[in-house]
Amino acid sequence: MVKKIKDSDTDAGFLYVVYNEWFRDPITNEMPYKIGITKRTVEERRNEFGVKLPGEIITLFSYKIKNYKKIERKIHDMLNILCVNGEWYRVNARALKAIQEYCIDMGGILNTEEIENEIENEIDVLTKSKNQSQYLFNGAKYRKGRLVLAVVSDYIYKNKNITLEKLQNVFNIRFEGVLPLVETYTNAENSFLAAGRKRYYLDEAITLSDGLRVVVCSEWRIENIGIFLNKAKELGYTIKTVK
Image 1 (cartoon, rainbow, N blue to C red):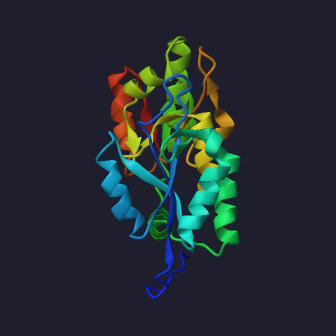
Image 2 (image 1 turned 180 degrees about the horizontal axis):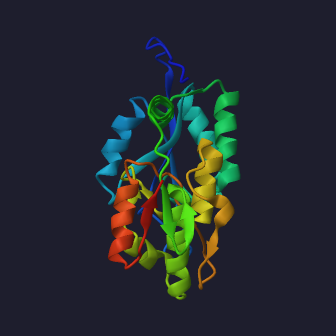
């Protein structure tokens, strides 16, 4: 459960790490992260600078912490050679984890809104009856997530020279309006190690013809699988629902 800091802690502020799916290196397609601070809520600050960029700014994690300005300078100094532009840094999973550990060591308290939402979602899943439907595709039965993985894998196999950009355009579905159906292995792994929530099939990475490793989103429930089934039908795939 996320702890709260009293408003009387006037010398405390937020240190946050955010990202934008559309802000990527044009050569490697890797996604940098913005490491910054704010005295207000992270959501207010995120909305403020988010209007300057296409796409949506997403909070990876944030900590409410004392001496936040000094701590931000320390982190920026350590990551100086990885700076892409301003407060945007090309950091890997190890660096993201180190930032979290440093914030905790300095007395920071996790205050990320997505963590609270995740807890609520888990409660919803436990209180709702599970849908046990299976799907028949190419002679095999799959659950929802594995069905998506099987279809995307088949599409890549039949379109051997496809790039990630074209693949994302074909499967233009975003889970919760944020997560792309297909993501680079590097970005998916970084998010998992930093946030502790595995949202892609990291153990089933697919290597494209250009050498880029990609993974398929595993976040599929009865509420959103219909969107994918419609897309698969548009692409000419035949999928039957079985009990």
